[in-house]
Image (cartoon, rainbow, N blue to C red; front, side, top):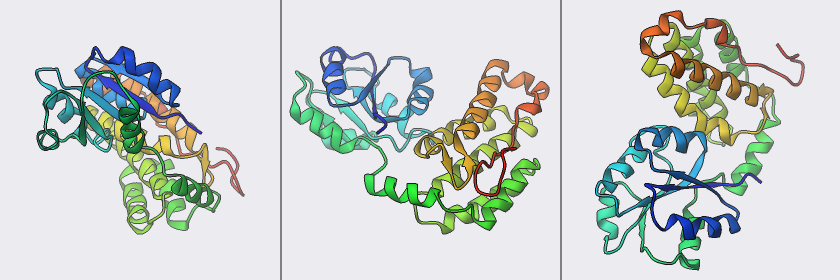
Length: 259
């Protein structure tokens, strides 16, 4: 089972005592005191929950940074603060409050209850759905994606995503968002491409290596490579982006050979 990551946000003095306790409970720990990189760090590490230091003068701004970005807004946030009412925390967008002090079982139980991961029943359903063949409309979407028709692939995958109620819908959303990012690259929209690539991380992370014949890990790696190149070159240089990096969706099972 994949270990969930708890983010300790703002360089709090309670990070030292709680980090080993979280690890003992089976969590990974991420520390972040860089607000500029907060969203990227939480998204890339697939944070299951963020604990924000309520001693920060602008703790509501840190909470808002997480809760207003599409890449991280679903991550539960608890503010660790003394004499902070749940109502004020909720008004800032947080999911609750923890009182500072020596972390105890109550802290850890609350964190475990809220930490965002795939429900075991959903995980089992996803595994079953991923063994199914890729639906015809999804095949059409893949064909459009691989032909560079990134706008058209959006329509196919959006229709599927809206119609599907099971967790496999996140496969369609992930491909859709990577395709939209590639569309923005071809249109010279640096910010739009990065935004969509960041959003796609959370959905790709939920999926097994192969789902309905789609090589998910290859798509994830290709998207990460595109994102890295965009971040390195900056907005002004996007016209020189190497479009050979916009790789196709690979189908690796059934009657499809890798390509």
